[in-house]
Amino acid sequence: MKYRELGNTGLVVSEVGLGCEGMIGATPDLVKELVTSALDCGMNFFDLFCAEPDVRSNLGNCLKGRRDKVFIQGHIGACWQNSQYLRTRDEALVPAGFEDLLKRLDTDYLDIGMIHYVDNDADFDTVFGGWMIDYVLELKKAGRIRHTGMSSHNPEMALKAAETGLIDVLLFSVNPCYDLQPPREDFDEVWTPRNYEQPLTNIDPVRDQLYKTCEAKGVGIVVMKAFGGGDLLSDKWSPFGRAMKPEHCIHYALTRPAAACVVGGFRSAEEVLKAGRYSDLTDQERDYAPFLKDLPLHSYKGKCIYCGHCAPCPVGINIAMVNKFHDLALVQGSVPDSVRSHYELLEHHAGECIACGQCLENCPFEVPIIQKMAEAAETFGR
Image (cartoon, rainbow, N blue to C red):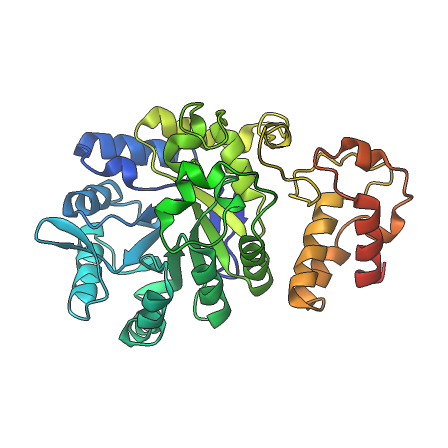
């Protein structure tokens, strides 16, 4: 397992983490298998959105004596009421749900206190314009949560949250199908077949801006729904009409700026271990570019998606990273010191491009790389 820094939190998290969907309705023994398998393959990041008491208690029992080995991302505003899950902003229910979560996990803090999902303007205003954000910040000040977070399926709301400066981490849905879609308040519409009947081209600009803004501001992204609820792994259910492999979905998500960890709702130890082997695969084995290159209806042509197929450069330029840093600078309208320092650390820079055209032959998406190297050299001065 390989690990990445999660934004500016200081947390170094596994590239693949464990979600809790597979624990819902599961026996204590199955939860133990999931947790043990996750820890055995190096996963150190657990996301727990579920409010179901048994899930919380079963996970807490599995982590006894091992709390210091994992980072727990728990959701604030996900409650259990009248034997049913409830997403709420109620000032009485939310704190009670948080206390129940800590008690059942047998811990006195969460590594990330995740405001449970915000997908529309009205809810955003309720959360960030009222008591709830104050409550979350007080929890952070008291050390009961170490970092603040918010989950969302809507890139507009996620972007607004990142720009507040109050959120350290975003839990956001990322996969190549969702990235083609414009912001929608109704998440079900992102997956509706009719919205894929007409040709779609490239990553939606709001989603693109979200990833780059998070990278620039140090807001870490934890990825959910990398597999589209499993539909992307099926020829029958994928909007692309063909199946991706799990490693392709994970790799696509982790090549987005600011993305540090993909959490999956694995339902068996076998699924956990298979996903956990992602870090050990070769670049060729997890390469998603051939899949996206030949889609019959949708296209990613003309824009760098950091797949790395442009390599090898005869001069040694890491073209994908140059493009990523340049894109981050363009989002900011200037070159932030952090982006410039990362660019300077590259062994070779855009200004060294000899315009040989080898990268153009290698690129699956017809990106004008020579032009982009010239623009990057002008932006960074070398």
